[in-house]
Image (cartoon, helix red, strand yellow):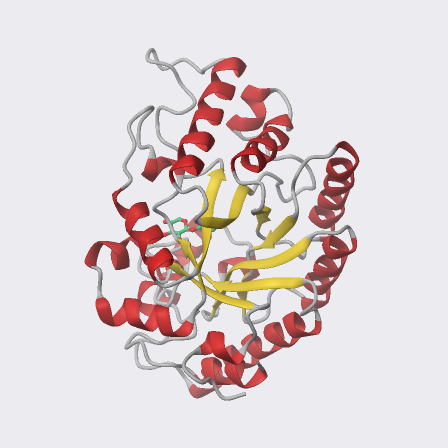
Length: 350
Ligand code: XIL
């Protein structure tokens, strides 16, 4: 279907199409860009401003400015609003895991801080956020619980179920997600399937799984990605694709698994397309988006939402991750905020 007004209109209301909104966009209130977001997407995620380190930069000190703008934009334009993220090991305030003397806090104190964080944040936006990334990236690559400060101070992975119970109390009708990357990994999949079964048995109110969907042109293997969609859905979970983008560079970090130091040795590769993106790469990018969306559409009855991690190439985190100075092309809108061939291809599938 040709989009009536935007990408969201090519898909039905039962298959939401979203974008992450950057701090820069919220700070500048760029009306052209906000207009584009309003026209093209029906669900929005805050890329950074609701993370704990930004919204509660030190204990008890809250900074609501950007998050309020984000929520107000969503309410005003009737978007499905995603809260990202309540519990994560990254972008945490510097004083979160330590006391005034810089000693690691106790388990009881961690519980108190976690509860306060979740309750304060969810209470402020109660009734407005219908999807929450409750816990982000708690499982590591080698099939077990990530040994984060959350896990270590708590002494177990129980912090995760506590977070789900609390989130459910605060927002009983919300989609409550466990969200993670590299979800095609069979070890990660089977570990999470066991967690889902255990939670179901014991009544932990997790009801959806977020597959971030940061991919490269030829990584990961989509058969494995598809198996994960099927496996989580078979356990009764709704599926959200929460952070999709396609790294278009030849030395994609995801592909090589290279350490940052190794990537720095490829310094000349940071901006290989400075003279213009070759048509063959543009085509590969389009094909990759098509392949992914065809897979999503095959599982339309399981998937509630696909969100891209950013709106246009100029503001994508992939430009500077994991090494500053990379110039990347991962999204559906180019640096001039024009629709890319991948956009039209994805719209045509809807
Ligand atoms: C990224 C943001 O896009 C960057 O701007 C920030 O510097 C680091 O975090 N997984 C997640 C997201 O869940 O929150 C991350 O977002 C990307 C990886």
